[in-house]
Length: 73
Image 1 (spheres, rainbow, N blue to C red):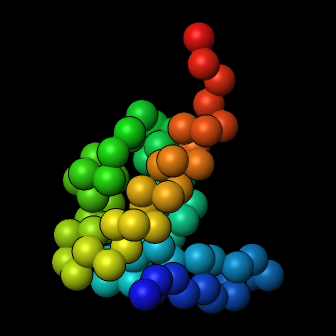
Image 2 (image 1 turned 180 degrees about the horizontal axis):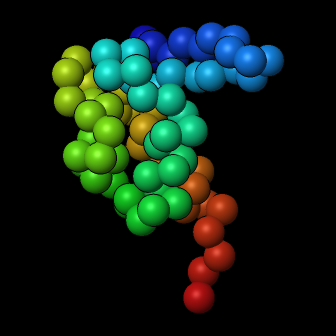
Image 3 (image 1 turned 60 degrees about the vertical axis):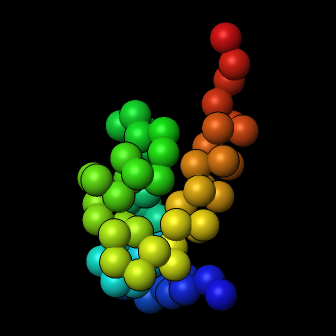
């Protein structure tokens, strides 16, 4: 079961990856941009996955997509 919720604020949709800690998908992407490469690093930065952990799969999927988009050297 995926617990992803969204809300409409100022005409923009906010998608929550972690409902327990109110961490948004944008915050996860910001962590990845800042160098996070694991769900543990994202948890340490945002708290996402530190409570019920039902969001860890979603975080891992976001990490996987970001790896797929990164150019290889």
